[in-house]
Amino acid sequence: MQSPARILVADDDADIILALELLLQQAGYQVLTASTPAQVLQFAAIKPDLVLLDMNFCSDTTSGHDGLQLLPALKQLELSVILMTAWASIDLAVQAMQQGADYFLQKPWHNSTLLQLIADRLELRRLRQRQWQQQQLAQQERSAWVAHSEVMQRLEKQLSRIAGSDANVLILGESGVGKSALAARIHQLSARHSGAFVSVNMAAIPQQLFEAELFGHEKGAFTDAKHKRTGRFALADGGTLFLDEIGCLPAELQPKLLRVLETGWFEPVGASKSQRSDARIISATNSELSSDQFRSDLLFRLNTLVIEIPPLRARPQDIPALVQQLLPALCRKHHRPQLQLSPSAWQQLQDYAWPGNVRELQHVLERAVVLAEQTELHSSDLALQPSPPQPPSDQATPLAPMGLPPFDLQWHQQQLINAALQAAEGQQAEAARLLGISRFALARRLEKS
Image (cartoon, rainbow, N blue to C red; front, side):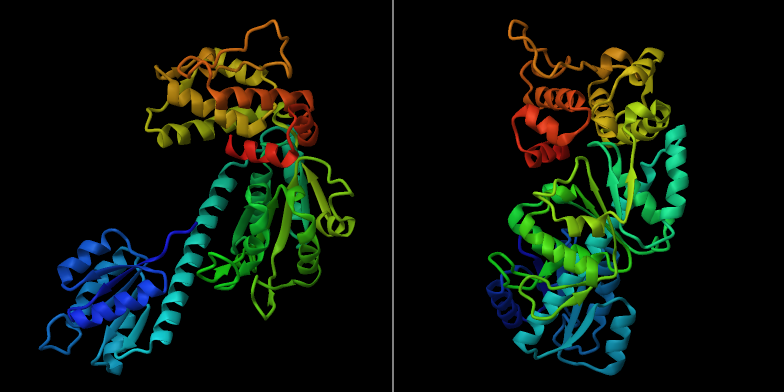
């Protein structure tokens, strides 16, 4: 459940503070109060979601100097600020907006108008934060693209032709092979590269939230919908929407997705008006979409162009570049000195079959970085121990690598998943059958690994 937004109310009038505190608390917000400029700066350091700032903290002044003096410090913290004053003038309003105020509000206010203004500013803030997160994700995905091997060079040439169109693309490939990086690469090469690249993992969304996640929802549309939310189609307008694990889309939502692909129109949950999204759709799956679970007419819309990304074992020439990219980032993440790989470690990385592909490579390197005792990683640090899908009952369960508990559940689970994927030649549906779990459950475990 999403925590309530925190609003800082800053005013030297105790009655105004009390009135705003009661109003905002009844609307479901968490309220902080400050009556002096020093308190404003103190609370601003904890980054509230919005600041309602009075422009005068001295009863004998109407200049607005106090608020204007505080405003630069608040904007430096990237806070949304609504300025309030009982002594409004056009010059003062212009000056406040020029210095970065989000809105200029004159006292006395109308409660409904103020609440709607706050909701709009908070929604805009959430939208900007999500766009920033998506931009960061897109940047990470673009940096993860490696195409040094011959097979990937052929794929790169194919991308240069595909990216020039707005046709929908379906990416095929094993789990962890880099389908999201490929989608980001297509976006980067396309005419939409200046627009948003919005990614959503269909396997990670609870079934009851699929529609709201894709199309958004209005305030009060369902329980806990306390604020309006913008969906992924709206966020991707003018850019690219990447639907990973498209096979996990529930059957009852497939007609709505088909409609938006055909017309561009959709309705947020609880809305009475339709919205339009001009988003290019790139989807991905690691197993065949069966006709009994997935509409054939929707599939025809998704697979205008089909690209298959080869598994990592088919392009070992890419492993050095991937390692050189991943290893420094992992060292920084875990505050470790820069590590190098010994010749034996490099050889083991080249010889291993990588049933979990690039995701498994990252997992192996991250574990080695965390447990490393020296600045050079050896083959023993990588702990690559592929297990058969079903070990004979008379053999003991293999122990986890040194440094992990012998009954480390996560490690053993990952080994079984890797072995099942290897036995199933990367087909996730078959691997799930071998493990005795649903494909959806396997997709969730792979996402967490």
